[in-house]
Length: 578
Image (tube, rainbow, N blue to C red; front, top):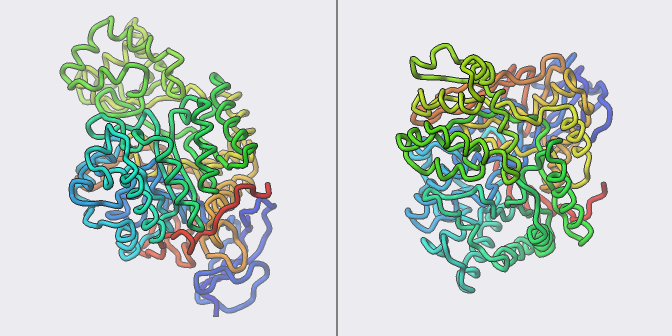
């Protein structure tokens, strides 16, 4: 007898081929038949009028900490994600040498990934030592999704070098120690190496994170270790991921991939018609790597990710040229300085510099919406457009925005409207989605919780494909979110609906698929806030053949597993058949 039989649905198998009506049979966690099935089943699931497709695979998340207090990986599980990759950007919580390493890495996560310190203090035990111990702890607790973890360069460097991990080059012996730990971590199931050389990544003390102090030789040596193990991969983030790659960065990416004989992916490719040369430079770097025999893949998002901003707490605005000078001083002094007319002029001019790069998309001040406010002076402003308020006050939009924030002691929540929501930018995005060295993903889910919400991209893109801009087909979008990332990471028997494959399945209503508007909720340990959206139209999610969600509501089932290299993954080719 079958465990479950899904009947009457339109099957989209993940390969990009057209939908077809068929039944899907599930037994022992696997798909055993697709077509006209007439076997008895313990559970009959009527999918008439619904789409049945593979579970979505998110290639870039940061659930490394949250899974310890939230094994469902909310809200990604609500949006049909059944498998994900974590441990990105060089940031993991293992291995650890002692309690000082745990304290350093935890605080680093607060700064670089916007995690709440109180949530980490209350919800994260951090009492393991090896990477294998960390993975075993998660497998033992159970998860509602499948998660593979890269091994973070920063943790390796911290254990090998302690305080010298910041500010110093590693000795030959220290690099050998890092490589030995990476070997042990991959043998325990780590998916490969992740690292960062990005100017956006600073630790709790505002110093560059450990991996940014590594020489190129150190990075290449670690990549060579990845080559020794099946089913591994590489991930990195660098300055060029934001503003276009230098020749040196493009060369290093290529050499990393060649040293590991593995694909390297980077996050995130932003397409903006106002800055066309930037994304063309980034795509060209991937093409040059391919010409040299390497494989470098860009991640890009198919939606404009919802986010909010603040002049009082860490957010993307801190990356605008020179603004960090202001944000490094305490709130009272910052308010005094920002009250000065000359400072407002300086800030606005700095934000307009070419060096703002990708962050220039956040400078459409007039189109910002005011979110939550706290002062009597700002009463009635919530939901209003900054440009309209500025017109009433006879001010420049930016000056009005700063004054509103100062009245709230810089606590005002600001909702930006990105400047790249124009027809030409969307036309260019649709083109780049089909580039052989670009894949969809990069939600950063699990990070920047109170500032950014990338998890809804799966259902939001399907909504756009079916009811909005219709820049690609539903079948193609599903292909990009299932089979394509599964192939990049070498996930065995995942990413397609096919007999023999794991039964990671999403059933959704094509008429109502989408995502609700963002709101701020306080549901993390310590009542810490995060942005929240609810999927619409998701009728059922199955992970490894077990139902984890019905009609948008998750149950208590935890059938997910840690995806381990060489067991759950095979080595992805450097030269795939495209």
